[in-house]
Length: 222
Image (tube, rainbow, N blue to C red):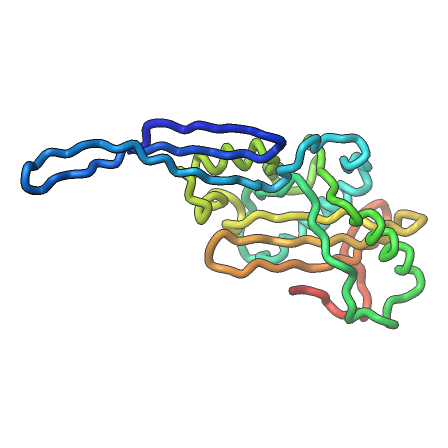
């Protein structure tokens, strides 16, 4: 029987103690004593870094969020699943640009790829309030704690009420000088039932709208 939930925050690392009364019984005397059992969980949730909203690390460019909206609208990696609220991690995650592109990468894309590497040299943080084409919850460290509480500490079910039973994360966007070409990474993490993965998206802006680029380059997924 759970009787308490205690939380301690120290330098952005959350240590949670979930306490239970555990009956310990003597079968001969049929007398049970209750022992307090404390389960300690060290949580390093998505976005669990101090000063998340520091201006230098926050992404506040509306064009980046327009690219994010276009990527999320593809509903990759599971387009067959009906739309539902997306669990979107508050901090960025990125991978190096696709090595399979090699010399096939057209010169007009080179700026976007180089800028992608620069923008993702450090962890960045998404800001709330931007429209992203799909309903979403931005999973900051505080929100992760709430979700963990809702799942009674079971990390395997923490995203069960969200789209695809998974969380999604985005990289910072690398733009070319004209902001008509962009490179961004979308990754997903499953708590159970799949290994997770990701994809590099090359995006183009035409007539004011961002869409996946039509190129002959390899479709880089993992």
